Image (cartoon, rainbow, N blue to C red; front, side, top):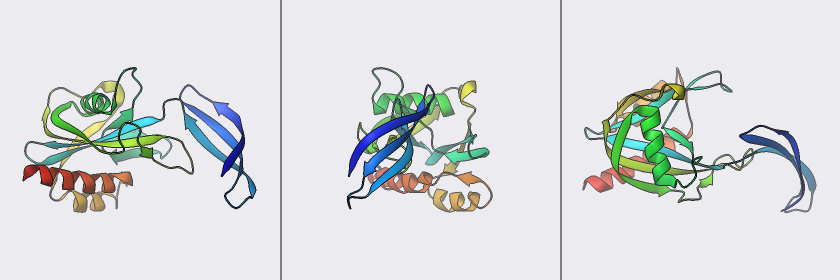
Length: 186
């Protein structure tokens, strides 16, 4: 695979819409449209409270046209922050919770690709425990935090997905975080 040329079609402070002129692994010439982020690294946080509940948020997602259930998440957009510092900040800003024992469970500092057919954004999964309410979420985040029992969260999220928008990655992140948490409890 080879990129011959990249043309910027539109640009905002956060995203660039690009058209790539490429040669495929089979030698075909093709055009591919996608987005590039100025800061392409992001983090998703699965926090478990002392009484074994997970913290999720309902957050307006304007391209979807509704609120979406997600784990707290955000970009590494403050100079000098790493994944753990960003995870702590995003958890507090979006939910008002603080926690301990933050661990990068997947993706490392560089992250894994999210939707590689559309964007160059990369995400890491950070997990933490002993989350406690310390403040209210920042008003400009427009998030509505809520808790689910860790033990029954998968089934409850499947039921919520029948009537509300639930981000696809929530299910995988939950499974990984639950395995991590249960291993830490032993």
